[in-house]
Length: 385
Image (cartoon, one colour):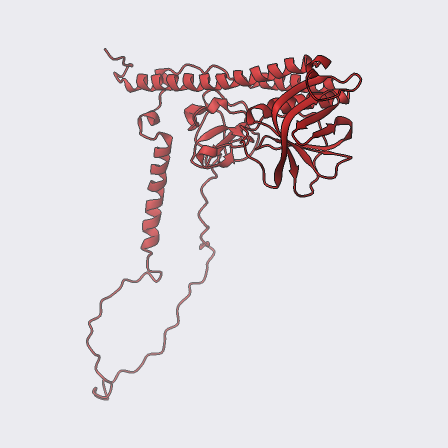
């Protein structure tokens, strides 16, 4: 037997069931994405604390190590690339930036491959053992370092080499290579604690973004708008049409400003003046002057009608959270019931940014991140409070 409320209806229970299923699905997706990122940050933190090489790791490599130099990491598949045109790279830093997205295995324009071999990271330099020879980049002589955000290419500038060169690695190994190169460079300038502190800060910030389990929707929370196909959007469109149609009818049939009614005149030629007797010949009357009523004290000039009051939400749907499009504070931790009042995108809680409205009307939590609303025609505006 179907469950009913006090009025005997069942749609409220169906609405509550759909809401709970959607909320749980969205929460599980967001929690899974959060845990993957949390595991990755903690893995990098453990790697940064225990990243120590040894001289024995270089056994069998055609590479002579200096006094106290150790091998930290080696990759057999790497390509030596050079930039065809002169460029200036930013100075090397210790930033541990999260990957913006998967790297595509392609070579950027203006970069050519000149050799291939094994890439080796030591405590003092980056080395490529290629088929045409060896290429070294000493940390103490680096003046520029840049990682391509779309391709697995890292470019390096050093003092004793005029042309900018670097390495192109397999796409799945580029992120690990970049992180370990940052650790090796930090060790060379005795700044390993700075990298550890940066990772601790990223872990703490990510902990604040942990999604909360959504509240359970009850049949009593169902609104009549949920029973209408399209919900609030359908009602809003219908209300807009109801306001625009009367205005269009009024503008299409304006009244006569003179206030006189139109009179139909027969197409009969008027008799000429010569055919009339002299006694009855009409005398043209002088043109009458248009009487203009003088304003009196009792007569007041009409005031323009007052404009409609400004929408306090600037077009945002009515909601108890006070979210609007008027501009204000960005919302990075929205209320759990935000998707009850706004049309959320799939995997809404997996976003790591602030609330924005996409161009198709849906709402995303990826504001300020690359690719926000990419599948919804781009970002339209920011939701504020």
